[in-house]
Image (cartoon, rainbow, N blue to C red):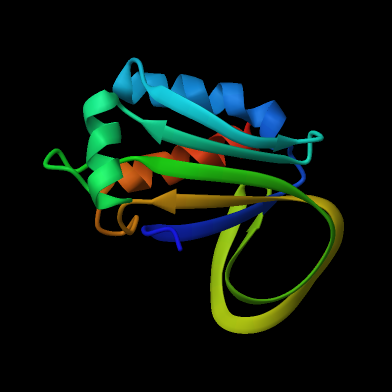
Length: 146
């Protein structure tokens, strides 16, 4: 099992279409970085591992997805096309265009075809770490602003 904190995002936008925009956002923070690409499968799956530099990569080899002394760490993005999806979900917030509203939590069902599932593995929770918050915000922005 992979260490770290998991977040999942669903979108109609392909990981292959949004990733260059995400790279640009990450360059704003890190300048250069290491990205390792794993398991590209028929334009339906992409796994990307990110490290700021070789020092961070070595730290990850010893510690897994953990924050380093600078409050940053390696992270992973897995994007896969879901041909058919049927999820039971809990809704906490609704967003329609530019409008969003917090609502009482309620159970719901999401059924769809050809949706992309993005699994993001971060070294900490987004509520407690500015770096992790930056990464998830950058991924969401890249997906939304395609």
